[in-house]
Length: 491
Image (cartoon, rainbow, N blue to C red):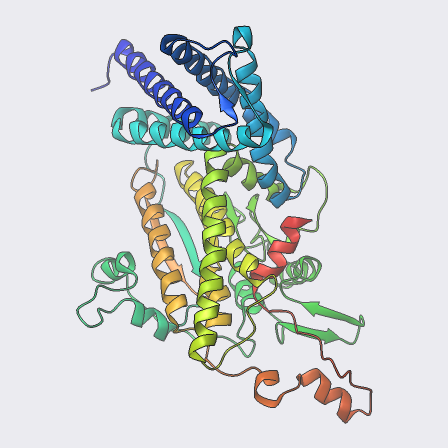
């Protein structure tokens, strides 16, 4: 039975009032904590005047965030992704300064850098309150899903009905081998499994099946075959093509674009996701029209690069940027601590984990994960037919810490939380969904060539050919997908 319209409007007004109240209280608390942020005039104000100033500032900030913010993010969509993520805080702080300026008699002022902090905290608090209240209001949640379903039917020219076949969500756990997954699903020494959500599925709806890769056991070959039906002439992650005289690298945007075109031509179709599909965080599009963090189109410039649209859906809420930034910094600190611990314990085999790697790891395990998971949830709520997403976090960490390391297990546990969140959203989708977990390859622990023999394989080959070898051998770039994805985002 549908609620009367007046009750629906009343519930919405109550949620708005609650969010406004929380924002006001947050602003008052920050004014008391931060020395460069005030809510009273130079002559001093009563407690009532300060409360009114906070309420009006919070209200103006909320209106600007709701009306102006989405337009600003969409206008800046062509900017590099990570630049957009950082600019979010500057724009958010600017809107707070504008909101404070509407107060009369000079009440309310903040230094620019303080405004950025205040705006970020207020956005996080209001977003958390709004989400909490909306989720508890089942009627509002169902109405939102109904609107999304109606929009989708209009977009596809359908006449409605609930006879749609189940959709499919493919979640690729990058680099997770069969043995590693089995270990993560077992109880160990009376401890729960590392991945309890997936372990629960194993006893009910799902089963685990091993498979063997081709000669080239890496993401480029496997994912190209899965999404485009052919991985012919992909002998390795990186190789030299004599015909063109070029070095092909699977995770390089230009190379990925060439490989995708070749595979589509050989298979004579655009890919697995051609019909109402979405590709999230992959090397290739799979023929999908909805894209986010897809490397084969990352080199494109201009408004036609739809891969950037996934950032709009994520950064349209400033609270997302705040949460991701905090998690990003925490992950950088975590990597530095774990790397230091590995050195002190003299764990072997061990690779270099300094330089920019802590930031690359944080990009893979936080930024890329958050954007991809959010995009997948949006795809589910809009009822897309096929969704393929690559979660690269484990692969990035396992390359440097080892496939069975404590660091890698912690990443698997966090991935399980992301899977649980996606499954929870799928319960409220306008159609049924089947969730398929798959992997593109596994990993084996072992020394790198340079670590085992003291020189790179490249230097050995050069010496064997009579070519000069530098005394200072440069570091070989990591083969993980996150490095090139991070570079593409910076550009």
